[in-house]
Image (cartoon, rainbow, N blue to C red; front, side):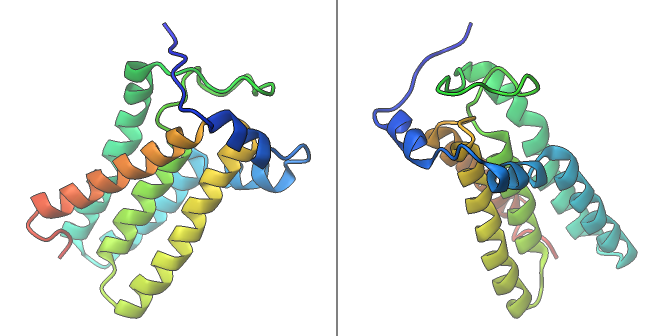
Length: 174
């Protein structure tokens, strides 16, 4: 049973951000779909394994894999309906909270940033990752597929999981 809970002002934000052309938003949405993110994760994992960074490989897999596996379950549990301001593509799931694009991208970026060992790379990837996270969130809002709180929840829960995993593993990647 779908829930219609939304925060005050969320639809106003969607109307302001909506893009009728949406070419760029759709491109960003496509890039942050699970399949392209999974391809990037496989590349990262392969590099870690080739470099024999076993602990980092396990941390990365757990950091990303848990978020990717649990997010659909959270959507079912919460049961929040998607915005209905514009027609949605038939292939999107029924529920919107938390945003999978936001959570999946945040898990990948967060885990990758934590396994880097060189300060300059960490800073550069952090900046690039932040831009990707903002782009992924903006695209979902501009396309009218999520409420702003869906996106924020996706980011927060994924980054909280990766950070918690780091603390549970006594400092995280090694």
